[in-house]
Image (cartoon, rainbow, N blue to C red; front, side, top):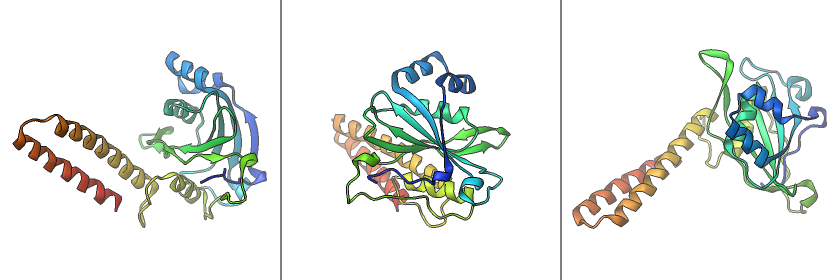
Length: 228
C-alpha cells in the first residue's frame, strides 16, 4: 500500500470530535488523557459508510462503519488511544492515522463486535495496522489507489476492509475473527521463541541446551502450521 483508500464523496461527514467527548464516553483515566494530549492533535469523523451512503444493506451485526481520521503531534499512536475512541463511538471504526507532517499515514482497526452478554457494549480485538502510505499530494504515477471492496452488505464490507490490514494471508472460509485469533497465537509463539533463544544462549549445560533447542524447534513448527 502506498496511497490512502478512496471513499465515496457521498459518505463524507467531516466533523471534528472534541477530545473531551472521547474522555466522557470511554471513562478515560488521567494517564490515558495525558497520552491523548501528548500524541493527538485532532480527531476528525471523516466518513460514514452506511446503507444510505453506499447503497448496500446493513446486517444485525453491522449497521454502519465509521472512518475516523486521527492527526498526530508526532508519528506514533498508542493502541490504548485508539481503543478509547472505539469505546466512545458505538460503531465499528476504521482509523486513518496521520503523522505530524500530514505526508504519511496508515490505517488501523480492531475487530469490533457486540458483547455476547450485553449487546449495548462492544469488545475489541488486537489492533491491526496497515503499511505506511503517502498523502494524496505525495502520490507518484506508480502509486496504487484502492477504492472500497465490493460487498453484498455492511458486514461483508467490514470483513474485507479488515482483511486488507492483516499481515498474514486469510485462509479460505476463515472469518476475520478467526484470522485475528490465529495472528494473536502467532505473536504469542514469537514471544516464546524469543525467550527460548535467550535461554539457549545463556545455558551452559549441554544436555539442557539440547532440550531447549528441541523445544525451540517445536515452537517454530507450530508457527509454520499457523502460517500455512
